[in-house]
Image (cartoon, rainbow, N blue to C red; front, side, top):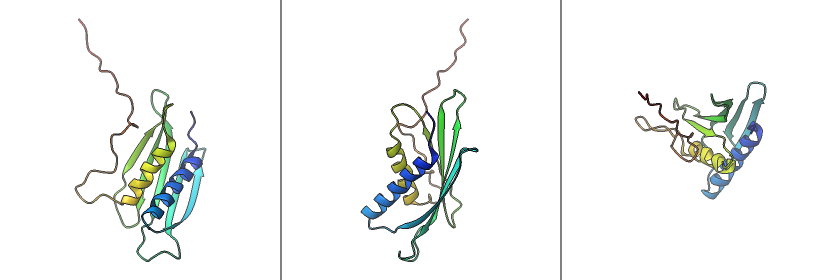
Length: 140
């Protein structure tokens, strides 16, 4: 199951626009860069020229790779201008995965902004968590 980086960035952008519009939030100008050879993608968000001053801007960086068991995984790193916080959200590809819901989860995390000092990062244990690895027990 290959991960389409540009399609997933598009889903995240649409989710950002939809959620921001429903909250009467700002709009952004978006630029994207994709390297299929390196399985990397980045979306940079800057406030639109007609939006109110002080709007959030930053980026969503995607990296696609294979796990040791051969299953695909996508890592989204969120960033905001002026913040050292860079939460990472992992998306583990599996047949029942809803990519649009994952895009909405990433968009919501980005809109919520960087975590305050001392808070846990945006990563949460959801249905996207990898399957549990069985423990090996020595039998005598």
